[in-house]
Length: 372
Image (cartoon, rainbow, N blue to C red; front, top):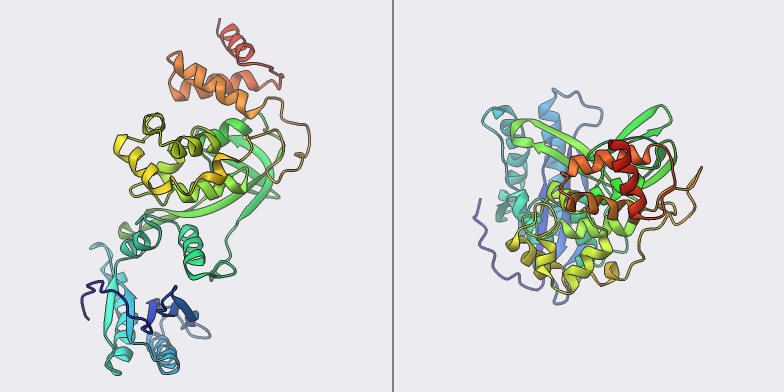
């Protein structure tokens, strides 16, 4: 294996990229051109169809034959394979994945092709600017950079939009009842405040996914993240491309409407951005440097309304309190010295009865009247 030194790619250079696996191996053949990289072929090699899980020899032979077929057809100049990592407590994982990588290295070595390896975090950082980018962020960036007419398909279909009855609103998540199933959906604080008065009503959320946990420690949990509007989801994914801003940090930071945050980025107001939870001065400057030329459409988007997520009236009774009003009341409670948890709890109690409020003053009056 050669060590990557990141030389400038030469026009006409053909690269085979491989994401090895014992069940499904993904690959893509990319050719360097003067304008942009060109995708010559992309697909998967299955090694488990009609084979018992323990039949390692047959699975490796299937993978080897598939890789050889790709090498023979497209004749790449170099092969790039994702770097292998495994926690010391799970050495068997490294051993099993080493089998798959060995087959790929063998096929390349038989044809005197150089093989380079890159860490997954380095690949993500190079592509999106963040080593912790989600699969959705990587997909969208690749679609743009490669000029693809549609997003690359995944082996497993993911939920991109979900509609259900809002059954619970918790501190950092919602629970949606969809038929007999209840879904946990993580939400940003500004989304939570917009829907906390809609328990029992039908809600539609645009969703993305990320894997929560440390794969090196053997536990990774898929999480669903939801927004009321697709543009909000797009901004969230863009926000996550900022260096050192991961999924959890981005969710925690989005306590104000997307339009306000985008406006602050556009006017390069680092001081305002530092008022967002978890955003320090250095991160604020990095957000501005990364996103300043990319947020215009979000700065111009309409403010949240009482309409449904898809721009249609929500099913059932209309929302009794405007989302912006709840948001302003929340900020007012914070300025009066309440903690975020206390502010959320007091707002929840005031909104629980379904009463209509016309101003922040009315909400605060109800909160403190009930506290007596």
